[in-house]
Image 1 (cartoon, one colour):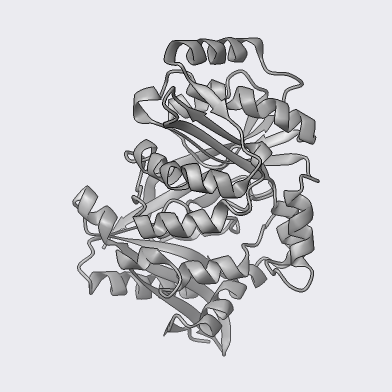
Image 2 (cartoon, rainbow, N blue to C red):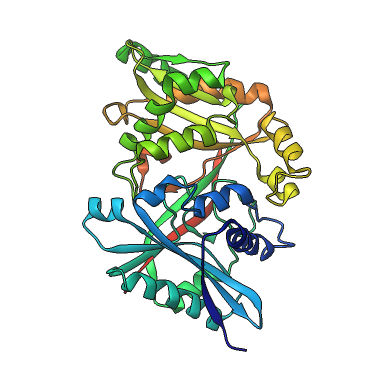
Length: 376
């Protein structure tokens, strides 16, 4: 049967169908973690996602005999293209059955959309910003996914190679054992850093207060700290306001570390949260009727894995031990909560400074994912 590709209008109804296909394709898979359908729909909606102020996008569905067999979203991020001096398009939110005709038709449609808009290369999987899922899984298919990462079937990379895509960058991920106490050398580094730079940790018991005092500064710090990382898309003020409301309202404050200087200026931040992987699997990506309960229980800390969502340090303080200060604050909280392991989530494979912070901990590198590239 032939494959039909349809460019879909970004209505709520269409996007829900689009997102649910990316969940249904993994039915019965023991390692797939679904996204929250509501969040994914909002990300793909021009009416909800402020990234559309500098991005254009088109989502496509592949059909065979009236049944959905694949999906892909083509994205052009003008902000990143201007910054890098390139004419690149991204692909993301991609899923497909193991069928070359389906895969070729999907990517052909996305690539043609990009060519018509002047693009000369394609990279992905990537989203509108670095806070979206990125990187195709190429190792670790029998490891439970996380809410911050993509899970995909093991046949995906073979199709990418077959179509002529090549590696652009790889990310690695670590599963880290929470120690029984802070490693002595780590503590010594943290103590030196505090004295040398006159830094201190601030703790909060109110989400409202941390949002008011450091909400905007937090995301501005991310822009500074991540500016030179692969494909980074600087967050605009509207995006910052969007993410403040999206994320800071649900964080578990015990799992957050704020580092400031003598003038209370933000120097570093560590944000982690209880793993929602099992809760999302139980909910199927839905909040109602019972999904909220599973998510609430996980956020309350009734899990043994903590997800390290992000660590950001001002450029002038990087490689000076501020990370040790952050984790010396967080580790006692992790131990008290009952976490046994931490998931690092994505780290660029050549980012030695980030990976060195784990050298004092028992760990294993258990997943690898890739951004692919091809000329158009």
